[in-house]
Amino acid sequence: MGARCYTSSMTTGRTGALVVFGSKRGSTREVAEAIAAALRDRGVAVELRRGGERIDDVAERAVVVVGGALYRGRLHRDARRFLKRHRRDLQAMPLFVFAMGPRRPEQDAYDKARSEVDRALAKLPEIAARSTVVFGGVDRDRGVDLRDWEAIAAWAETIGAAAIGSGG
Ligand SMILES: Cc1cc2nc3c(=O)[nH]c(=O)nc-3n(C[C@H](O)[C@H](O)[C@H](O)COP(=O)(O)O)c2cc1C
Image (cartoon, rainbow, N blue to C red; front, side, top):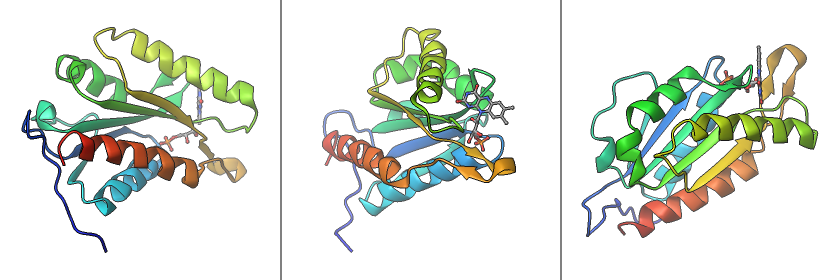
């Protein structure tokens, strides 16, 4: 398809995107994979990692995306751990955060999830995410899947623009 242009900032030397996820049952991981694929389609070099793993060179990336499932009002431990561990590097970086996810389509479920992710981020005052979103979740036991793949793709587009815009 289009020409591949690996992103690198001329001023900072930062390249590519790091996409990190915290997922128990896989639905958040699948969203992280979709975002990674969308970025790669735009020519951005992407590393996709579980948040609990050791990840080096965070500060070398053009953008960082962190996605975490919400369980009992808390962001998945792997996402929290990554944010906490790398908060100083993340301070100076374009950071995009997504949380999963309501299992009912009503607005109050999304508002509750939003306050849960906001609370998790408020514990790390060094960090200011450029964008924080909540995507609908999955309840496999009830056959419910509220993931809006168009909304996910649209959000990934804004991340791609930031990754390319920071370097080009
Ligand atoms: C025991 C349990 C507790 C949950 N608690 C919350 C919650 O507090 N807030 C929320 O928005 N979603 C909650 N969910 C929904 C999950 O975030 C949703 O199922 C998500 O898609 C799971 O992601 P994963 O498949 O990556 O683990 C909960 C799900 C389960 C099974």
